[in-house]
Image (cartoon, rainbow, N blue to C red; front, side, top):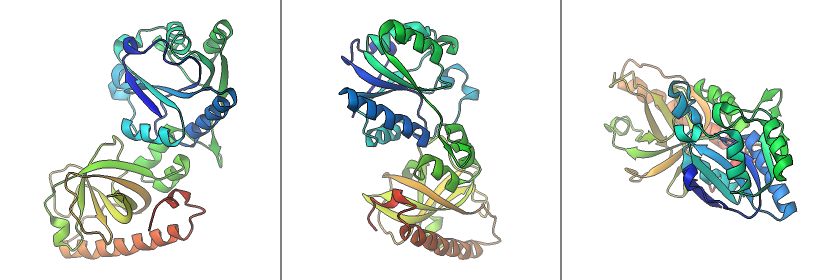
Length: 326
């Protein structure tokens, strides 16, 4: 897959001689997004054209109304990796600036979708908006398609057991600690990426050494203890993650993400790891002593082992585990 991140005035025209395009933010790359990508690839193959996902970076609200901007589910590099795994040919991101926000929808369609990508078909959600003051919509896009010779295909939202799949809903689930429900809408566990940094070494003294993670993701699940899978050194290991303030030790008041990787020993400082959230075990608790905390961690680890064994034995249901080695 070819990835391009460029300002609007840097965007090549033409970029492609013809294409099938989808427009969106695609935060989370959830099942609704995946259905759009499936249809885009299907049509691109039928027409013998490249498939393109076109987005903006950062999220428009980060520039226009920062206080209202949602917490992003994915760092950009993880979004790139996921879209590549979906089999798309191109992922194009236009840098969102206040100058770009002033461009009218009609100009955007003409200069990017027509002159830049020579789009033959464009896939969007029914409520998609774009252009200055968000005046561009499906109706305008269809009208311009008649003028410039492209077809607009509207993709209806995916509904699972009565629940509308959306990035907003996934965010709410994660912020409430409902990682299993979020996993179903994402089609995979929520992954937190981050670099391992030095901590105070308290976990090792308790008998459960931890990797202290500096997260790249904006959205951190609700405070508590979780059973996780940890991607480290080209392996995937079961683990337990604590998110919170370390109330037993009354630390500095900053939220910390600390992962204990089960049956693992090795140096991880300054390495990047991925933490995939499988199930919430409990909320954060202040214990009467470090010894009581150590006993509870031991219990958490045993519970996580049981959850992991159950998931591994049910690969049909948890298909995201199938490419991993155990």
